[in-house]
Amino acid sequence: MDFIKIAKDVLETEANELLRASDALDDEIEKAVEIAYNTKGKLIVTGVGKSGLIGAKIAATLASTGTSSFFIHPTEAMHGDLGMISKGDSVLAISYSGESEELIRLLPHLERFDIPLIAMAKSKDTTLGRYADVFLSIDIQKEACPLNTAPTSSTTLTLALGDALAVCLMKKRGFKKEDFASFHPGGSLGKKLFVKVKDIMQKESLPICDKNTPLKEAVIVMSEGRLGNAFIIDEDKKLVAVLSDGDVRRALQKEDFDIEKPAFLYASKKPKTINDENMLASDALREIEKYKIQILGITDKDRHIKGALHIHHLVEAGIK
Image (cartoon, rainbow, N blue to C red; front, side, top):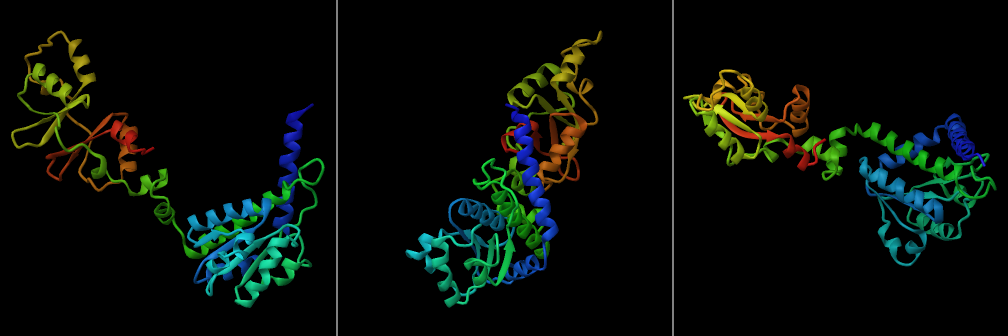
């Protein structure tokens, strides 16, 4: 059995249905966007079975992209949760057949409360379609299921149409990356856009030596600092060099090497630093990657050392 061909056929079948739906889009999508955009309360998504599962994902996508939304099962709505729907809300109801019994029982109550209804079904000539203020077709010619029964192409189209609605709303709201991050403060994007250098840099117990510190003492300071580096300052307390493990190894190979000599002689005289501790940690990471280094000295405008940002600090904070 050729499973590669089977899988390819599934993808092509579903892709063709998406393209067909794209060609058939009309101004109903614009009306749906307007209803959702002008909703003062919540855009509540509801559906049964596979439609309900897809609806829950659509609600989650809407909620994370600036449209206040949540999913409610129609049966639960009829047994008390209907109170969660109120004036100022709107509803996105999903049923491929347009005749799901649990969902249909809910519709008169939505009409009674004058709740705007966006419907997704295979035909407007269904109970759900006739109740709808806006109708979005999820009609397909062929399920990817070889029996043409299991919801496959239809659920993919429903999900994609929900994504399309969410993206349209993002565009209308002028929703930006920063807004998305504010809804995901614990995610990787949130960290990229909110965590600053000052939040994760090491400020205490910094490995600092003066210009005259012998190499043998600087190595001890470096080891105690656990950063693999030591910062070297001048008589004005300004950062003038950084001594790394690599600097020490290179020094050992020199003919005039002397462990009693000042560490400054063997250190890197142009250390990479930043003087803005409010810089995003993700931007600092790009600096570290750009120069292929492990540490950045954090200084003030006069190059007085304030902290250290090691690549390990970034990794531990989940900055990528």
